[in-house]
Image (cartoon, rainbow, N blue to C red; front, side):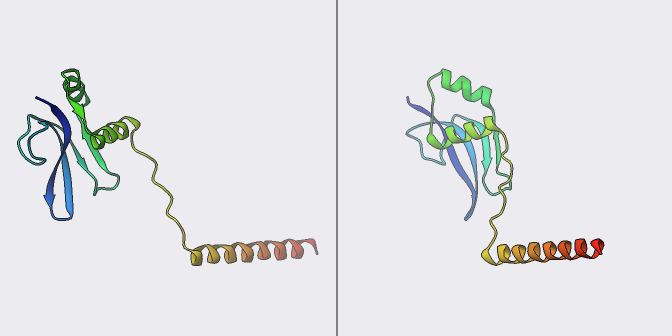
Length: 117
């Protein structure tokens, strides 16, 4: 019997969450499983990953294979939460910031001239 550690999709349409399960490779994706070993919610910010790494290690020792998706989740869980990425700014926003910087520089230069006199 080939045993895999894989994701089982739950939740409603366009609102998924996943359970990390140990299942026979012949059973359906959301069907019968042997044991649940974690959960993954991609919709939360930051993404929620809760895995029982000890149980996963035990199953791997017994010969269970990780799927690519679960292997990526394991790697992400080991690394811990990432720092939030800085939001990209639009060209208009960058232009406004450049104008504001020039105005501030001009005001500072003007203030320096008035103090010299």
